[in-house]
Length: 89
Image (tube, rainbow, N blue to C red):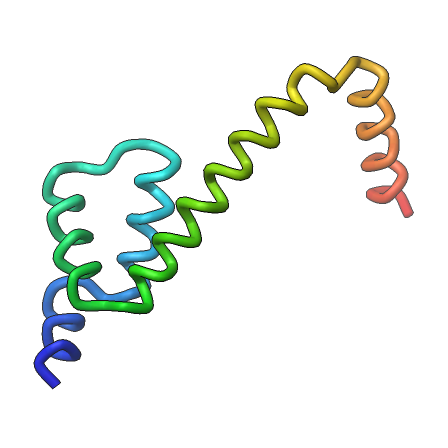
């Protein structure tokens, strides 16, 4: 019961997930970081989401850093052409 009240008063899960996404994309303010940390202490679901988000971010960064070297101009043009075809359907 107390955890549910703290959830509502301090930071709902919907805002916590947005802050986690924002933290991965850029930096968040110290106040937002404090609020998120407090939320993560009491919410096991958001803690699990945060762990999965960190893992996905790590995998994507590794994948894209490897793919950056492999992408050439013709692949980009092929992709553009396919997108144009799909948009024109």
